[in-house]
Amino acid sequence: MAENIGIIFQWLIFLGMAFFSIVASLLLVTRKNPIHSALFLVLNFLCVAVLFLLLQSQFIAIIQVVVYAGAIAMLIVFVIMLLDLEKELRAGLKIIYSKVIGGFLALLFLLGILYSVVAKSPTGKTGSYTPEKMTANVKAVGEVLLTQYLFPFEIISILLVAAIIGAVILSKKRT
Amino acid sequence: MWVVPTIPPALYLMLSGILFTIGVIGALTRRNAIVVFMCIELMLNAVNLTFVTLSHFLQSMDGVLFAFFVIAVAAAEAAVGLAIFVMIYRSRETINLDEINILKW
Figure 1 (tube, rainbow over the protein chains, first blue to last red):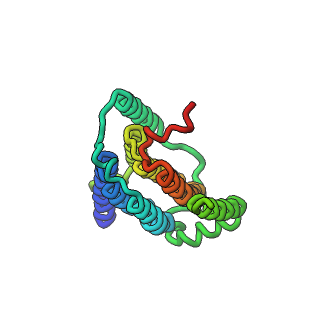
Figure 2: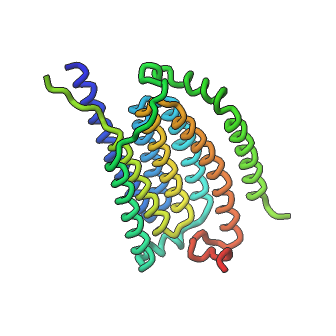
Figure 3: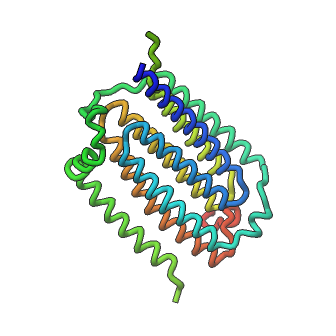
């Protein structure tokens, strides 16, 4: 009976977070004001972070909150405030023919994804990271990251340095 | 004894597909460059959800690390992309994607 209550709570959290993340992303796409879109983006990131916790990946959930909802969303809001978008706000949303066609193709794409999810359940060799082992999630991630994935990890650090230098050079005033 | 089934992976994958499709629709229909950029972040996030779901249900660590790398690349992309938007706005006074078409032939 105790397990049943835990699983019912998992279902409630999953359904609530799924509902809120879909609503937030729909509002992101439809709001005219980019600031509102950015705040709904943060809401969506937080909902997905809770889903990561439900999947027992505490490390990714924390990184999601710190990097996505903290750093990237803050950067987006900052740039929206730097730019003066008043005129473009007044222009509003125009529905034209190509947008209707694009939305229709995207819906077909969704049907393809849903069919491929329902048709075949994920199979494959299961690894050694059982749920009991995943309770020490950060330790497990660190071990794999610094042994098996050491080379991609170093490449990512070079990529971040290159991005920082690129951003500085791009936003510098031409002399 | 009545036992509640656990959440199947198909539901997580469907949610991720729905979020990805909403991101695609936004990127195709909105014309403000920053909103398109936010829709791309939404799509990256949906893909992360797929990675972590499959990693959980296959009891492997590779998906979690891929999600980590995707987040790092998204951070780099955000820095460079927003710098480009500021530069375009400085020279052309707009970031409407219909008017920024100098790369078109």
